[in-house]
Length: 451
Image (cartoon, rainbow, N blue to C red; front, side, top):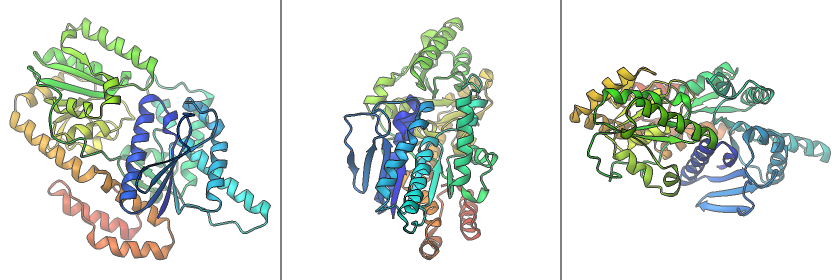
């Protein structure tokens, strides 16, 4: 199958852009490993980047000229998506892909523009219009979520336009891939028919994130807290919980959503730690090391006795929590966003209520006092991460979405080959039920399932 993936990750905010880029790259590589030809198209944001690059066997990355060759704020990208779409149409006019997967709402605009260009050129040329290429959409965040987030984006005309465009795009494409149950609900609120929605979580690199050497040997118990450097990430809750955790060291690994906002949030957290008298036990991971050393983050996670992710408002990515689980570290989390999909309370981690430092301190204290329980959570978490969220498994689920959009003859042949071997490596008693659910969903035409 020839697959086109369209993304503009370098133009998104700092953290979101890197995460989207990493997800697209990993999924493309996994699809290529499965025998597909994958072309990744992204807006050129660096004049020095080559027009075309082969990053791995079966994957070609195309830098598309659309606007200035420099990073552009996300809210300004829409103006250049017609140019992006025109370049895509030129590329696909003589050699179209079999399926297109657009990541982010701006990429969806580019694909929509490309389809319009192809239709118009066929009409002007007087020839027969080629069959439209099936389009799959994944959104890296929702404008509606930004509007609902406390202290988030203001309700201005730009955000309102984005929300309207996202709704129109989601309703117009052939299929939508949601990364969590929360995203499924969001797409449903947007008016997307449930039969067009498939829930496929983002994957993780289980070779990079696996039990292994730690960053250092901490003398005192260490807790690593994960999240974005925003007020809703719950870092202040963890800092407050330190008062009930004497002798425990806290390392905050905060991802920067934007440089100024991240700096302001760091200053606020440092001030709060000083006011509570725990500043000497709070440190902050170096984001520069995380960007330059691939082994830094796994080693930091392995050094923790427990990893905490306690946001009190979404959207929340489960990626960092899954990385900790894959490293064999027990996790304590709030059931917010995609995190609630990946952590089984009492099996692979502990769920706590948001904004309750007393409950959080009690849960961590109980976990630190029981090494056998910590080990059990770590083993179960690593097994769950490897069996459910490895990229090859995610790619298989996404491939099923693509194949359902191809001609019926090919689709039926694939289903006949795949159905007898469908099996989900689950959590004990869940295994048989989930296998049956998945097989029933394939026969019934339902497209909502988890990888």
